[in-house]
Length: 68
Image 1 (cartoon, rainbow, N blue to C red):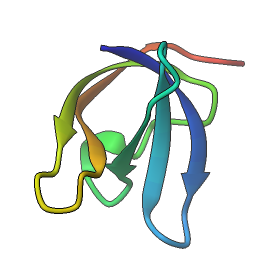
Image 2: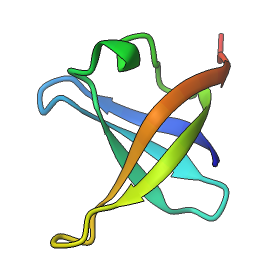
Image 3: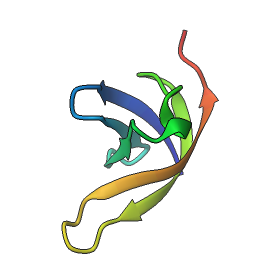
Image 4: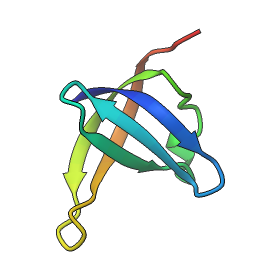
C-alpha cells in the first residue's frame, strides 16, 4: 500500500501515515527501521489491523519518495 507520512509525534513515539483513501495508519518510531521516515515522505507499507482495538498499523515501511 502507498501513503504519505502526515505526522511524527516524537513525544508519544508514534508516526502517522495516510493512504490514498484517507485512512490513517500508525507506526512505531522506536523501531530502528522507521527512524529515517520524515513528515511528507511517500512510503510503501503493509497495513495491519489490530483485532481487539480496531487500530490500523503500518509495518514493513519503505520510503519511496523523499519530500525536500
